[in-house]
Amino acid sequence: MKISRLLIVAVFASSLGFVSGCSYFKSGKKGTGEDGTQTSGFDGQDGFGEDGISAANRLKAACNQAYYFDFDKFEVREDDAESINVQANYLVDHPSAKVRLEGHADERGSREYNIALGWKRAKAVAAALKQQGAGNAQIVMMSYGKEKPVALGHDESAYSQNRRVNLIYEAK
Amino acid sequence: MLKLFQMLIISLSFFVSNVFAALELELTQGVDNAIPIVILPFAGQEIISANDNKITTIVGNDLKNSGRFRLVDVGSQQMDGANFEAWRARKVEAVVTGQIKSIGGEQYSVIFRLFDVYNKNKLFEKEYKIKAQQLRKFAHHVSDVIYQQLTGDRGIFSTKIAYVLVERRGRAVRYRLQIADSDGYNMHILLSSRFPLMSPAWSPDGKKIAYVSFEGHRAAIYIQDIATGQREVLTKFPGINGAPAWSPDGSKIALVLTQTGYPKIYILDLATKKMERLTSDWSLDTEPNWAPDGKSLIFTSDRGGSPQIYRVYVDNKKVERITFNGSYNARAAFTPNGNAIVMLHQAGDMFSIALEDLKSGRVSLLTHSGLNESPSIAPNGKMVVYGTNTNGRGMLAEVSADGRVKLLLPAGEGEVREPAWSPF
Image (cartoon, rainbow over all chains, first blue to last red; front, side, top):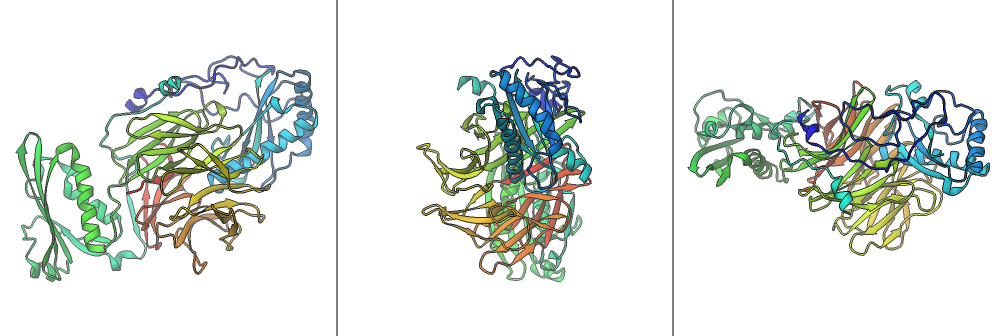
């Protein structure tokens, strides 16, 4: 690994002072957050975490969330409506709070087209938040397409975990 | 901008190691047409190199992996390149000979000759002065000369391939943008990041690469100078900044932005920074690629209900549909002569690399297995490099534009994806 020692890793994102509101977050620990970007090689713990997102969304704000989507579908599932409302209400009550919506897709198909599909999903969640009163400026939409899978398998069980939108608090 | 440059990564190290070795040459049909050729050991070549790094070994691998040559082994016999009758008896069509001499000052004189057995003549002879560290580059030049002399097509042995390497260690992921010679040697790292990198695109002069990086969880398109490692942000708008594609004259970049709320195709003039949107409405439009004449672009759109390839004309923004076969066609690029497009095509559960002839509309599948993606055409139009998933691991593969020759290029470590073939 001589190569990696020669490298300087890009450090971006001024640390946003992420303070977790969810009890199961390993808050402040190096590498668990995606926000406090760290420079490190493979010895570090940083990487493709999901910011402590668990399978079930907590009905508590301000809490990072993951919303899943059916194959080739871009509508928010009905059973996610309540947890989206909880986050939306928090955003309404905390005008300086800000969330990032990351759209994701499963691994089938071309990479840039999957970026577009992830974008469509992020937009659907953004629309649901805004419908409950969240402001435009509180929502950052982006898409990772199929570049950041949470499940690395090549079957529907992996695909269904990867078709998702992650809601991540960038400011609370 | 200073802060940006401090964050840049460039490795100036030179590695003579192979990042993706062509281990498996699967000639599905091409054998009958392959030209039988003998490459005799260059006299004195041990003074400059050993083992796998011999000029004749490198040239032999180049020619063999092109699928258009068959190496004939004559063992250790001393034979005269110009002894045409003897070669003819062995059904050899071409013979390569050469000699190397030290001429002092760490320089070497290399003479290389190419003989046509059936016409009994010397097709090529030239003397070069090279340094030891130029050996691989010189060998690829020799391969290019032989390929062009015997097939009439320009060789691609001196070209490079840019690609994304992904390494996972536990939960840590490292993304690297790298370039290497088209045979996998001479690797350079352009960028290393813990954020995803994608969509590398060569400038037509081969000096720069545009790519998408997600540093700080924001998509941005960067242009990086390969020689200096310096880079600049081209676009960093809210939302998608994706799929950069250089115009054939290098003056513009087509890209995808979501300024209207929907992914749309834009053209950015690099000199004036003037931007123009080419497509409109509520569809997903992405993956623009220029026609060789620069007057139109093809792109992927779901405007008809499924992803298909469309063409948009730069002057009047008129859009026409190009693909009608199948329910998923994406990521298309023109062949260098503009007569066909190579794209990703779904056939059943498979994502295959396909070629569509634009005149007849006929689609031929070039690959027939698994999850393939990201086809990129060699500048001579003869080979396509693409990403493939073999045993759950991403690696590169090549297929000839006629589908006859297939090569798998397994990577030493990590997953290799998104190959982009350099210009000549």
